[in-house]
Image 1 (cartoon, rainbow, N blue to C red):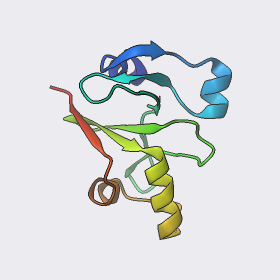
Image 2: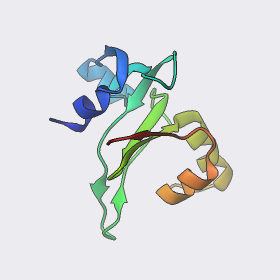
Image 3: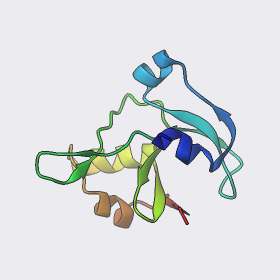
Length: 115
């Protein structure tokens, strides 16, 4: 099962994007987070990848129409607010951010246990 389907078990009122939406708007699934919200959000749930420096990475774009970006850890799904992330990147004047910095410096993060 792929990461999008696995994460989607935490959503109600699921909508899947068209290929055009997924490619041009950069979101992978839309829905309401069970137990965490009553608002429908678009989620970027693409998996992380191995970068040249052996760290895990994830690319993003300010053109994204996703409301939230989802990171998968061993124990949790970590959901980060995209507008807050964009504001952080703009204020810091950086193009690369460390995941741990996002966990410590952003306020909207939601953690959903995988167990």
